[in-house]
Amino acid sequence: IGTIHTYTRNPFMVGYTRELKRAIRKNDTFMTKIILDKVIDWYDEEIENISKDQYVFNKNMHQKAYNILLEYRQSLQS
Image (tube, rainbow, N blue to C red; front, side):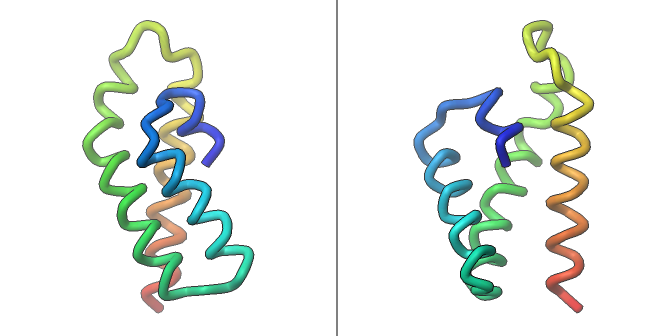
């Protein structure tokens, strides 16, 4: 989640990531899924831009974070 903050200060994403942390901490699976989907949707739209941006120094960390979010979402489906 912190990796996202190195790329954007989008207030929606900052809010979503804050709420995602809170939902995970509270073990609120329902809210976690909803917010996680919003964060993944953002990454779906931005991951290509991130990978091509010459000013993003931690591209591999973004890809890793994106993959972790996808895996976590998949684990919540089970």
